[in-house]
Length: 598
Image 1 (tube, rainbow, N blue to C red):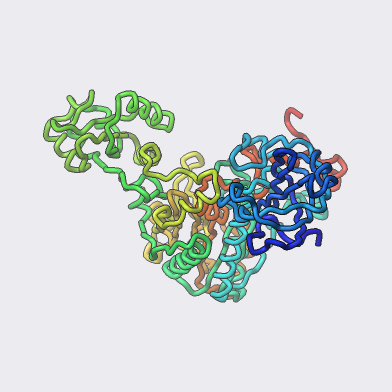
Image 2: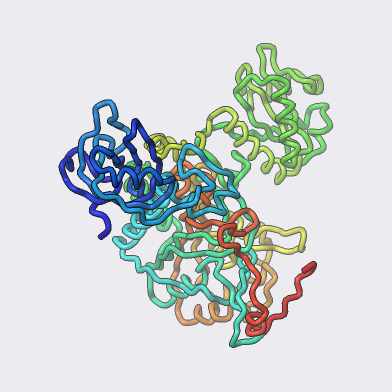
């Protein structure tokens, strides 16, 4: 080995030892002719000393060392002078007086600082990802991810699950997002798809008799990107036979209880809160509610219909959210602009005072209606009521976003992780930062007005609730599914369901979403065939591992916990992907490039 120790492990108990360290020059300081170098590897920093009175040769060599040069240093561990002890460093009590110094490789001046205190722009970080990944915080985030993956595997293994890999080259099947497709060289004109999820294969594993399956699966989806979405992401994927939805939910609560205990030393309180889809849409305007604060939405449609305010009387629904803060008029105007930018026709408001409600529209509301509004909303003196009137869907969408916006502005939602790793982990050391809930009883279908047909709300392999099966052909919009979503702090961590295990029922569901018998056989014939040979009742989930790891570290951008993420254009500035390929490769794949504007 070229080193005897790492740069993060030497302490006072090692004083007097001869050691060899290797790593990157984090910083070099010349104090009165004595050179001090902070030597860094992924384990930490150790101060090494190049003293000309001890070795002129070593000192002369050290005069030319620059930032990020890779070096090795051999010497004796000794106490630091008392005034140089750094209690914030694990190695802060000691230093190494260097006897031998070797320059392994020189380095150009780095275009970004390899330092947590200075963060470069997103574009530069992505282009020089190998330098960004040298930053201690980035290394700690990926180490955290590794340990979390170990904890996940430990939990599944001790519960008798079998880790099974499913294929990455699969048949293209409709699952909601666009597929990434791969041309076949040996089958001209035919294509594989990269899996959006292992959905069909894990169901087939249940039919095959593997009653407890899991894997940390790669999922690939060609969709528009955002902070919590990447073209490729990792999913905690599992399936269990002979269970109902309560069994699955109980198992997942155990998984998170184990994960949070192992990683953050937090004892999560279980069971998690359970909300129906209808309930969460009514209270929070979203099926991904952030429960770290209140500020629930209030339906005042019937009350305000009695008023002379025509804007309220003409819309399908009127709801409001009560903000317990005394806003200035400029702040209110700013929120009105924000609401319009987020799809609202407008944002009406009233302020609660000792005399009742005040605003420019109060004159359209009688004293009795004002009393009813105050009673229904429970608004306190100084609070402001913000109203949105529109279709039920638009009201929920706008007020749901406004509720979160107000929560952020009031500081009711904790900010993202600190720039210092230790501070961020200290802040996350209590369960008040994490509010889990289940959302259940989703509609099985949703109407797509653009194409004038029903679509599966999650996916078409979800079983309807038994009492709703007769409504499939009569009234699909009223059919509820055996669906359950796990939500943490306003972010959907994962979705699951009890699956269909009957070919007849599966074809009925497929028919609702517009798949004829012939089309169903063409796209999913292998699954329908498998059902015929005895399929157990089964259910499972796909849980976002990247999202879980990010939220556990107080982050909202999953790119911060992925080693080599893509940017918003699904590109990698570091390696230049996606890229063009040679004409020869296209010919072998029987493909002719005809890109518009090329």
